[in-house]
Image 1 (tube, rainbow, N blue to C red):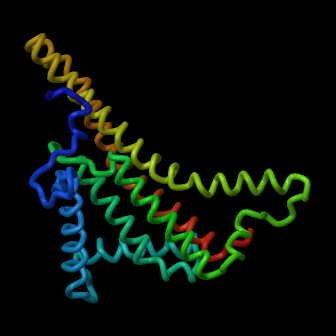
Image 2 (tube, rainbow, N blue to C red):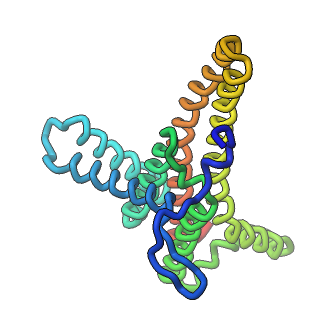
Image 3 (cartoon, rainbow, N blue to C red):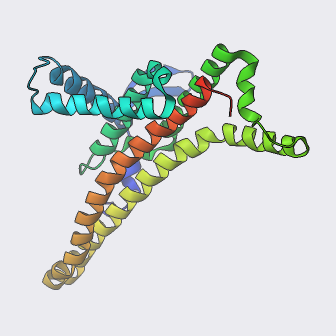
Amino acid sequence: MATDPIHQFQIVNLFPIAKIGNTEIAFTNSAAFMLTAVVAITAFLVIGTARRSLVPSRLQSAAELSYEFVAGTVRGTAGAEGMKFFPFVFTLFMFILTVNMIGLIPYTFTVTSHIIVTAALAITVFLTVLIYGLWRHGLHFFNLFVPKGVPIYILPLIVFIEVLSFISRPISHSVRLFANMLAGHITLKVFAGFIVLMGGSLGAIGWAGGVLPFAMIVILTALETLVAFLQAYVFAILTCIYLNDAIHPGH
């Protein structure tokens, strides 16, 4: 069980909350780590911005840096008008980044390694874009699927491709995050298992041979830390690109 690379992704019921018919609603380890992330983010931002000193502390600098980083991403991708969605994008970025980082701690749980979580986030983005685009532009929102300057004889094919691309956004948006986090953590667990197996079967020689897998774990952990940040950033910037389509649906 200790070397099983899949066991780390198992969702465990911690205690029951309610029961509807034959379906039991329980508080799981996944929910616990999501709640932990929300509490950690809230504490970080509230404490970091409490004093608002002219000479900021390290915590205040980190909070301001995270704010400016996401604000710059929103402005650069969706324009000044896109800043109305800043709270939404900032929440997504900080939540994904925090749960990704928590998942790197041994014996914790990686929330974003489950497609149901990443799909819920992606569908939320998709519905936000769709609802806002229709509310803001009405039927003109569908100009998004009709690029300007396309010859009429290939227009039906282009429209079909654009619609298919739009509908598939939640799939690519969610699978990208889920697959990267899942693959990275499985790789870490496999190399950790090599060390345990070599040490248990070959004794001192095995532990000496485990130096290479251990070095790989160190390197992969550093890489996974970078991936954890990059995946949060990619999810956020794609969200901004999709929101820009809702704000400016014309090509």
